[in-house]
Image (cartoon, rainbow, N blue to C red; front, side):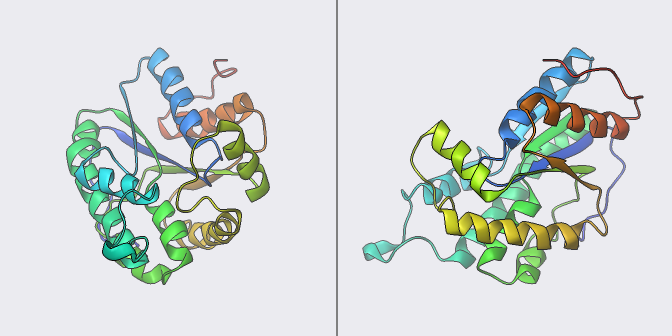
Length: 224
């Protein structure tokens, strides 16, 4: 569990999680559009971040950053440490300043991703320990889809396959997500969404949870 407790802050920190192809990026964009239309100041961001360590991670995920002399991709431990380092930079540079200003921060992936992805090849307790200074989100929305559905969506969007996108890796990561959800859900506000629904239906469910967090009564239909 994070060593950093929820400190007094004006804004709210909301994270979306799920397999590659679950639709987290789409939902971040849709949620931001609705919340802004309702008058909220919103920051959208992602992990890996766009900071210096995040750029290194993206290079590693796409095979552009590897070990010397053709020794293969970065060691799993190295990648896990890079994700943890990027997270501390990301919090300091973008998330915390926005929260102090009273913004709603919507983040595409956070600690659960490390527990699922790096925890698939490393002890989850160790991955959690190196991330213990990452404050908990106010709300985590897990967009759940079957690995087969996520694979079809990745194929439809095209682009080169990244480090963790092989089908077997995604099935293993899906199992790790379940373990991570059980582990973190005991002390954090984590809500599962049915990602097999239409994009609009997922947004509507997500908005209901977000509005509850923001102290609003349930509104009508989501913007479509």
